[in-house]
Image (cartoon, rainbow, N blue to C red; front, side, top):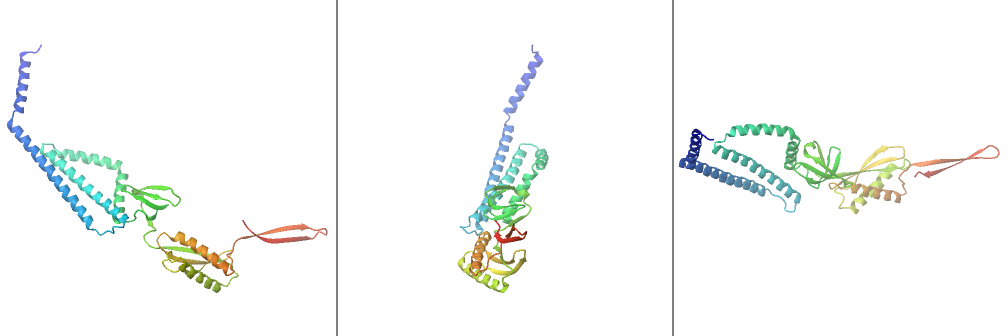
Length: 310
């Protein structure tokens, strides 16, 4: 059973609690802290709105063609990135300031957060690297959606440029997802005009001066026929190679970005048809078949003929 001493102690604790609850000064101090905290929250909210609005106006000032969808998308990505960074930084500062008003030691929290952040950074360093690299790719406009690029051994059209990963679509339809942190070197084929290179072979028996004249005529006709395809007229660079079957003459044409594949196909077609019209055949491998027949007197007759190899 409870003794008189226990009862007295319980009563004393209750009286102390009642005294604390009814302490007017304590409630005034608490109300003052809450008011200051609300003012701090409101101040940081207004500051966040002002800074994010200023960044938005800054990006609005940038002159971007209204029909350039890719540039607009890049502008929006950078805007959201900066606005989110402002919100995160000011939000953390606001939280620490409010906690300090209620007597919480924020030094210990900052130290603990620093240790936790260090541990997380070691575990998520690749993620951080991907995000930072992606931000620089977007900010420096190294490439954009729709460009044909080569990243390492991967080539394709950029279909999505994110803050962490980049998606490329190969010419045969496959999708490559590349973390931005692994993009060490990029070759962009869509920045400037491309060049179509075509080697046209003719037999050794043909006169090279006559061949160059014919190739020049075909080049001029092809350039006029496909005027939208070629930026500059097709040029004859000269003899490129002397191989086992003929003489290779190299042709070069400057075309719009990423049009060198189609231009090369058109050039090969036109050169073949033009050379055949002039009686010049493009050399191709032949196979010699020997048919040996024994005669009654022991003599052999060899029948040889040229057959096109399959």
